[in-house]
Length: 83
Image (tube, rainbow, N blue to C red; front, side, top):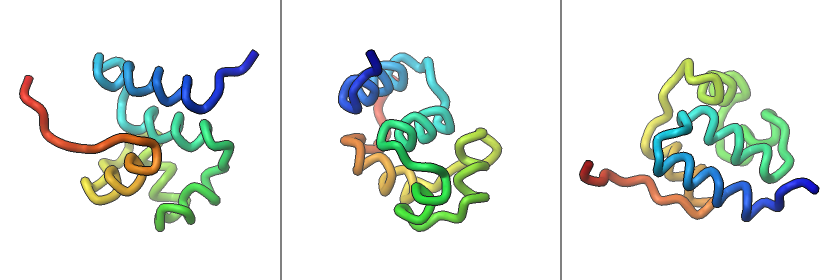
């Protein structure tokens, strides 16, 4: 039985907290959790498909604005935390 969206995002949050996931993988997981292809996801967040592909493959770093735009839709807040 496939995981529901909430379970996927909960697992992703745990992976991010425990440093088991790169940003690109996290963005790809978020995209897939809502069943969108790269074109539709990119359009939703004002990105080009090429820019999204580069992000998902960790070939480019997103701006904080882009991270917040994407993350906020999935219940994430991007901020600095002490180690």
